[in-house]
Length: 188
Image 1 (cartoon, rainbow, N blue to C red):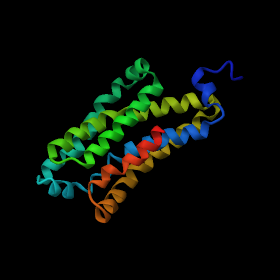
Image 2 (cartoon, rainbow, N blue to C red):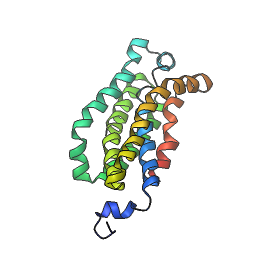
Image 3 (cartoon, one colour):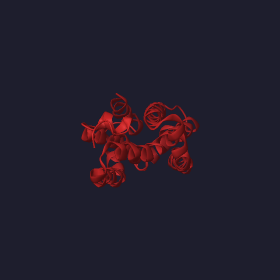
Image 4 (cartoon, helix red, strand yellow):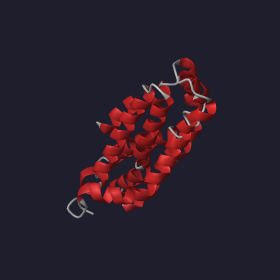
C-alpha cells in the first residue's frame, strides 16, 4: 500500500509505528497499574486521612466501578470526539485526577478524584487498541496486540510491589503522583 491509499491516521504514523506503540502502551500500562498499586497502601491512606480501612476500600472500588461504567460507551465517545482527541483527553484527565488524588485532603475528595480517574482511565485501553490497529499494517497487528497484552498483563503484577515500595520509601500520596510525569510525557 502506498501512503496515498492509507487513511489519514495510517499515513501519519506509517514510518513511526514502534514510536506510536510505545506512546500508546505506556499510558495504558499506567492505567492498568492503578487498578492494583493502591491495594497495599490502603492502611496508610486510611490512616493518613483519618478513616477506617473499610471506608478506605472505596478508593479501590470507586476506581474500578467508574472504569467499568465508561468502557461500554468508549466506542461512541471515540467516534464522536475522534479517537486521537478522546485518547489525549483521557490521558489529560487521568493525569490531572491522579495529581488531585495525591493531594486529596480527605477520603471523600480522594474517592471523588478516583472516580474521575477511573472514568478517564477506562477509555485508555480501548483507545490504545484502536490506535495500535490504525498504526500497524494488517500483517503486523498481531505483534502490536501482543505488546498491548504484555502491558496489560504485567501492570497488575507490578502494581502491588511498586505500591508497597513507594509507600514505604516515600508516602502513599506518591502512589498517585507517580502518574503525573508519565501522563505529561505521554501527552507531549
